[in-house]
Amino acid sequence: MAEQLTGLADDRALLGRTSTAERVSDILRSRIAEGYFPPGTRLSEDSIGGALGVSRNTLRESFRLLTHERLLVHELNRGVFVRVLTVEDVEDIYRTRALVECAVVRGLGEPPYRVGALAEAVEEGRRAADEGDWKGVGTANIHFHRELVALAGSERTDELMRSVFAELRLAFHVVDDPRRLHEPYIARNRAILDALGAGDRHEAERLLAVYLENSLQRVVEVYRRRVGDEG
Image (cartoon, rainbow, N blue to C red; front, side, top):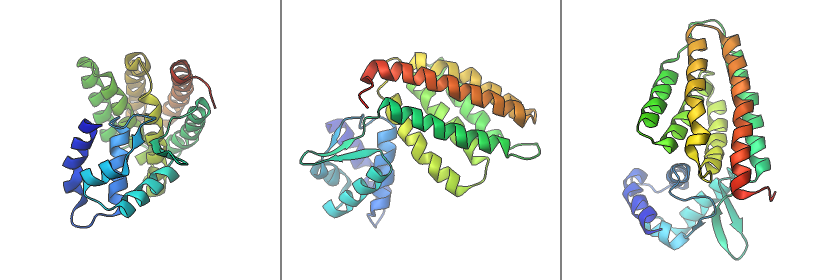
């Protein structure tokens, strides 16, 4: 926990002059997504509040916001913890992804499509793989699909999926073999990018639907092995 708190102290400058609960939530959300606070970690009000230099009330409000986003859970008489997803949670996340991401691609309209950010995410994943950074590959994969959703040009959809992708990262942090989980996504993201670059949104949607179904099976397989299906 000491190392995590040191990182949070470095984030204090991000708060600016006004320490709002929303800004604290943004910092904690990013730290949770990056794995600084793994699933099941108890978050200490005193330690985190001290590291960030914020009041107890501000921190509690940020905890409330992140609990609403299903990233944290409050346990009576025990405190606030980073949420540990169930297998059913993971399945629901992928149902949501399929509904939203496939709809985004289906509704793209006429080409050409703005695929520059997608290409950057694919390259980010390739570089991470070359360095053997398989968690980095997972991060690049999230970036790819976040940019895919952004093609819809909808702030509401972006906000919805930001929360969904943050939850998905909770599952990724529990997985004990990130290479086995993330390596296949590099080529699949490239195929989706190539289809969109060629102006073929129908093929891109087909590839995406198959990708998400296969990804669900793979994630559930490794996740169930690690945490079990305790519902």
